[in-house]
Image 1 (tube, rainbow, N blue to C red):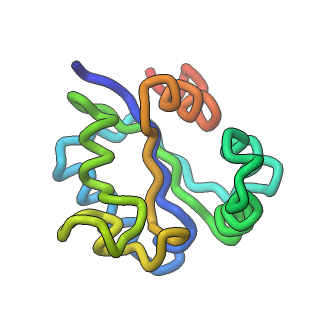
Image 2 (spheres, rainbow, N blue to C red):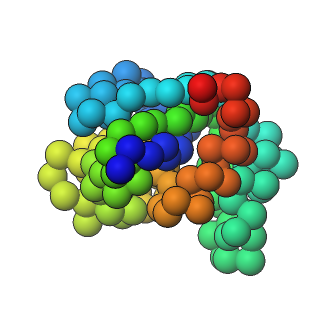
Image 3 (cartoon, helix red, strand yellow):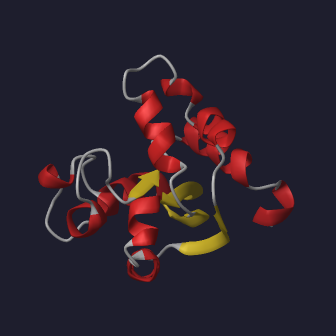
Length: 138
């Protein structure tokens, strides 16, 4: 089934100049970029996006990291987009990610792992709506 998912190229990967390689990897994996935007998240925007993690001990560091520089948010489409993106990204901890995955190639730590991807259809709907209007996704 064709579906949409959200992905974010995180500040570490943007700052290191890996955005182009990550976009190429995604396109070569059959993803169609339906919407794309570069922005610098404010503290309030990062807190809103990651609100589900507000009570977790890593929340303040996550917000600080996600606001330290520009990110690239994108709506990606393909067959089984959510599951396929999770495979291509690799494990959250780059040290445990499979060879050739985005996180293995470009991540440097569990907290600086270069890319985010929605983990379920409900999450994807929320995350896509957080950054894109319905008009952006036509």
